[in-house]
Structures are given as C-alpha cells and as structure tokens.
Length: 75
Image 1 (cartoon, helix red, strand yellow):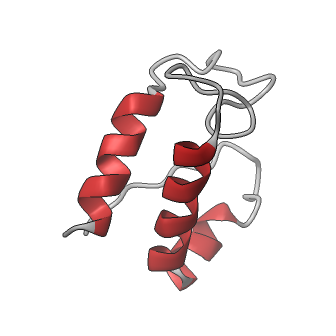
Image 2 (cartoon, rainbow, N blue to C red; image 1 turned 45 degrees about the vertical axis):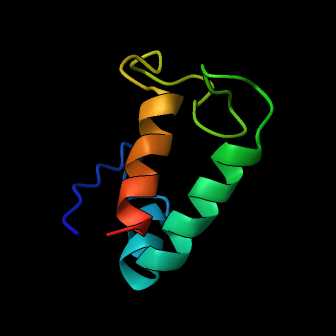
C-alpha cells in the first residue's frame, strides 16, 4: 500500500509517525471509528472533519473514506 500523508500542523502532530509505525492498526481503528459513528454520510469532527480546518474540510467524503479503508484492509 502506498499512501501520501500531509500534516498541516507546523512540525506535525504525531499522526504521520503513528501511521508509519503502526499502519495496520491505524487503518483498522479509523475504519471502526467511521463505521460506528452515527453522524450519517457527511462525517463529523468525531470521525472525519476538523473544526477550524483552513480548507473548510472541502473534498472530504465519509463514504469514499470508508470505501478506501475497506479496500486497504482487504488488500
């Protein structure tokens, strides 16, 4: 699996390091979190979006994210 990770926090917030060190566990946790969130198809700050996102969370799709996570876990 190849992934491009972009951290918009100056000097990072540890997300990239966690992904590199424990990719499979992070993917499984993300899939579980998004699947069990009852917010619907749009996503919410609990499962997908970021409050105060400089890009206004444009381009994010919970349904596409779930599909991608499922593809990654089954590859």
